[in-house]
Length: 88
Image 1 (cartoon, rainbow, N blue to C red):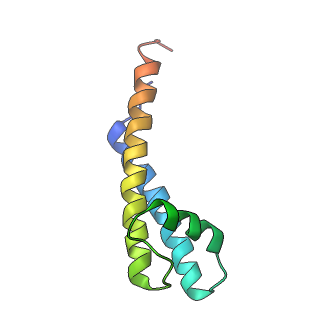
Image 2: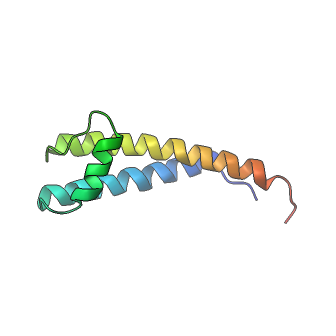
Image 3: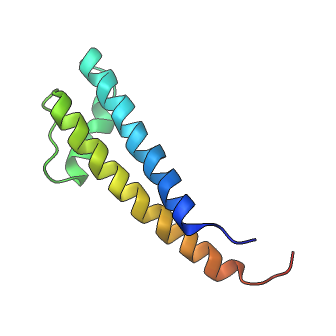
């Protein structure tokens, strides 16, 4: 069975970007929530800093959505390459 590469990319973008968004908003509500996770995100994505503003949450969410989409597309493509036409 083949995966839809487009659907895989969109689903991964929504999951990863949405996860970063929810943790970022949780950190805006409570300063101690998700600090370690957001520090890792800040070290990976250039331009994002833990400044506790909604704008920085949006920047991280956009980076996460783009990153998730790329990883989803690549995963779907690799899966389809190895799945082949097994007939099962």
